[in-house]
Length: 320
Image (cartoon, one colour):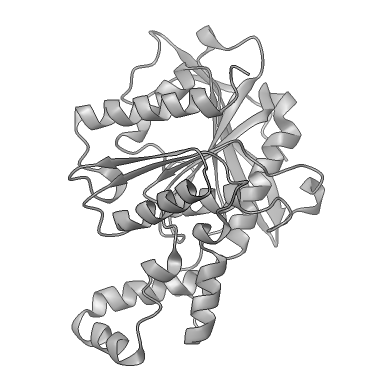
């Protein structure tokens, strides 16, 4: 079920790890098998020179890709490489996971399985923490785009919702915090489900590519057979904003003000709801940054690194 060989190698990310640092990594560990598919995760530990004497707090990373593409290797993207290395250098472990993806034709939706998989990954980490030097009491989530949506859902929903592997049912999927990089928060707003047939027909006629993308995204949650009422109900069910309450965990929101894929107003709405319920949070807006932060400057990368590390130090309970 798990790969027993530990790999040590020099980190190849273009980042600033400790000089000569070697990172212990377990690759392709199967954390779940269901319906003939194996879901895997990778565990990255802090560099050998700074491995803590006690168990490492854990950051579980969930990749993006519109719920239909991407992989656990996808965290090696511009800005993430340096931030990830800084997280490791501060003594945290990073676990990058797979989850069920929908097919591009929309015939096989990936929900609720995708969120169930992510919660099972948290449970697996908690169940096997002692084997890898991880602290089962200090676990948080970090996701990008679709992965941020899944991270928020996992963090905000009750532990008993979206239960999966019975072998992991005795372990909690609760986390201490969540980091949201430009993730969808309100699916009804994102997909404009309140558009009537006439307006939707106009979109289909005059903006066919936008209409096609919307239909493909909706198929992730509903498949190809659906009606308008169904769409609204399901989008509400899978929207993180639905579950924000007084028990929600601290949240760091990172978003660009030029994001045309997931508009900034998604994070603004979530931040407003967190404020209403007096949940610790911070919304950091990056001027002129689009989706995926591909236009990040050196200053932006330094800023996001500092924000992430400050947030982790506050809410990972590392020093508690």
